[in-house]
Amino acid sequence: MSKAKNSENFDVIEKNKDGRKNTLNVLFDCGDKEGYGVEYSDNETGIASWSFGDNSIESYILAEKLFKYTVDILTELESKQQECLQDPKLPFVEVSLPSDLISAMFSIKNGMPTERDKDDVLDVMKILEEHFDEHPLKEDYVEKVRLNFRWPKETGLWTSLIQQSA
Image (tube, rainbow, N blue to C red):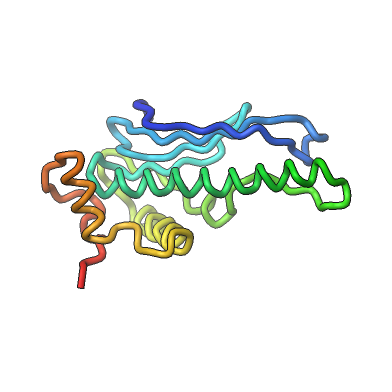
């Protein structure tokens, strides 16, 4: 990926690394071949990435919501870890994204998703829907964002996943 839209860093302690400090990074960006996406890494390596495969409004919204979700989760866990570091009676809190999200990572290049990629996108959408209590691609929201950005009305990879308004 290449063009950063937003990023957040989280300074954490890793129990499995003898209590060493580490920085977790979350990046919302856009690449020419991968489209909009989110990258999750630490000081040493990339951990996971989700590249939606095109530069459509739907990919933008999914990546933006995924970025917000990852920031919400890591912020909450970082705060809990700080609490447990101040009170030794509390159990240690590991700061990481949920394994179901990590296992659903995908990188769609040149707008050509595999069946596995499509299933992983649906899994991510389900995670987002559970977190935000609404379908991530509600028709009225997609249209509002499209108009705000003056985005042309085009068919993207995930247009068929828009939840139609009643």
